Length: 405
Ligand SMILES: [Zn+2]
Image (tube, rainbow, N blue to C red; front, side, top):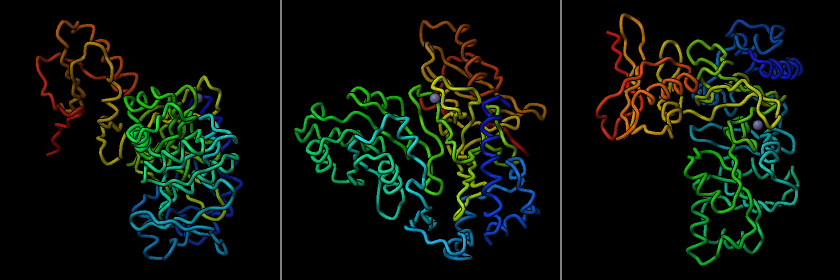
């Protein structure tokens, strides 16, 4: 375990020791502990907590259905200021405080300040995203235009008239907004819009470049409706820093093992709040920890982006591998026409092979070496790399040919 991870867990352990005794008094939490054979007094640190099975979103939905509205997980006497509904239905009580989803630090890292006029284009209808970011921006002292999604033309006009300096919302919607503005003859170049904080969908490098080419600094965050901020980019734009006020772990979704060494697994979250604590909540998202310090100095490990959903990943030699990981690892390798990873079972052992097609005029041997190195560094797998003459243009990046018969 790296020093950075140890320090992160030490801090989390102090927060857990403070918060868990009260959390364990909540009937729904106590039932989970009982089912796992855990005494409240045993919950002294994150290692002990890890004995609690991960609570998936589907389980949370059925808990709520069997004991409406919050599955017994809300502290007695708690009076949430707002309640949201996500598909399921899943009801989410808003926690206390001026920034209940803890995004303020993420916005600060993205350069947001009290002087900003922020167009908040996250939805305000039933879903928490709009209010979530509104409160974070307000906690920072910024002025918010509660735009939601839709009416792009009116929003573009408001941005210009009100001098919006910052955007929060989906990256795809920012693009639509800027295009709509251009169509309507509102020249986006004349706006003071300087920065954007985006999330809730992937930000492909091409879209990031498109936005940056229009003079905006763009940073992304990762979170969920239930848990708020789980990671955010700094100026290095090299992964998503874990927040300091929640315990975010990456776990093997089958064994529950916590993976601090860069292996891929499910993002599992523990929130310390007293009224609606969430212990070992499984997001269903697949990621991996970068345990090394970041040059920016923020003292938390980083998530290597969201690699996909856990259900889409395959397990190879006991480690999760998602097709998107493969695509990202090999993006931009010079001379690589296309590739696919193939998983096979040979003598009861998983074998990972990377088939690659070299661009005409490319150096096959050099490419083999480079690709093997990328796979080792980014995916943490040793793969046999072979050059093939032709791969179909629509080749899947990851093919599982194992038969378990
Ligand atoms: Zn950083």
